Amino acid sequence: MTQIYLVPGFFGFTELGSFNYFNRVSEVFGQALSERSVDAEIVETDTLPTGSIRRRAIRLLEFVREHRGLEHENLHFVGHSTGGLDIRMLLTPGVQLLPTGEERKIAARTRTAITVSTPHYGTPLAGFFTSLNGRYLLYVLTLLATSGPGRYGLYVASRFLSTLAGLDRFIGQEENILDSFAENVLRKLGPKRGDELWKFIEQISQDQGAMVQLTPESMDIFNAAAPDRKGIEYVSYVSASPPPSLRGFMIRPRNVYQPVTHAIYALCHALAGRVHRQYPYPTPGDADMKRICEQLALSVDERTNDGVVPTLSQLWGRLGGAVLGDHLDVVGQFHHVWEEKAYSTWLHSGSGFDLQRFQSTWENIATVIAESQA
Image (cartoon, rainbow, N blue to C red; front, side, top):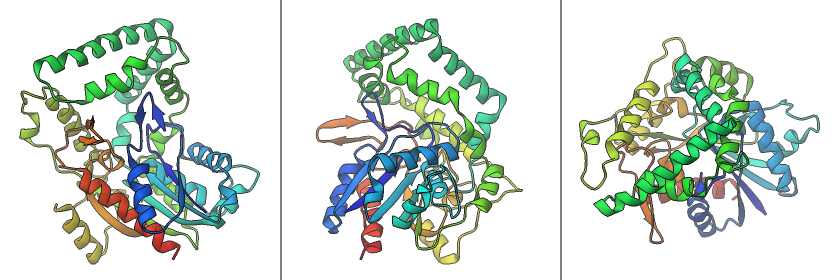
């Protein structure tokens, strides 16, 4: 039987409250695999949210062991964002993550390493978290999560936000990210240290290695030390979203929160679009560049990004395709209705990402896996 591991990215999790990182991916992906006659078990892995790439790769190895991956003949890995780097680290020739040598056994069974929106050459956004402002923000979050008064203060604030989320429907507000966060996380949150959200923030406080490692400077070293392994097909999917627009800041009567989330997107897009002259991104060949521009319907240069990662930084191995969507759209975190339940986007990027693009992306990935086993 075939096993496929879905590996989350930076700040990643399997589930947080009722939030799922790969939202509806297993359903869509599984159906696409079945239609291509691939009998596969899809495993959504957990990770260390901001841990170093090496430690995240060790956790991935342990997860494969726990799910008996070594008993399967065909293994495939699909990593979103930093998850793609965890996969590359695990499969690197000669790497020793644990003294057991299981890395080689896993690699011998691996057929594809597929990366989606992965910062193979780093992202300037990582520099923010290593700056004084970024470190101060993380310090405040850690202090709030690890101290009794801090947790109780956030607990009271969460009750207020949950109430606000309930009230906004009475004034005609459509389903928004505050509603989703309240329903899936805040209403399940308690002041005890053992609750999921506090554990998640504590993990961030304990290891923030990836924040340094995802800079273009650090990824330059990573790429020199982590070559591809022969016999494994490396395929990358790149994403991009349009630059912020004045229209995104306009207040809509049915969604007064949109300008706020678009402002956050605008800031992230500007930071991710900074150009590092000493560590440039690779220039794809003419055929790949033409394909990327056609699929995105955007002109692409070193400033083009998906709100988190520069598009040209996402290229590694064979180009699988390009997706017009922001960094979280591709894993199902976009505005849509599924089985009569509404889901909201985290960032109003204006990408126009929809269910058709979502299904097309994961059907394309399923095709790559099916062809590798033909």
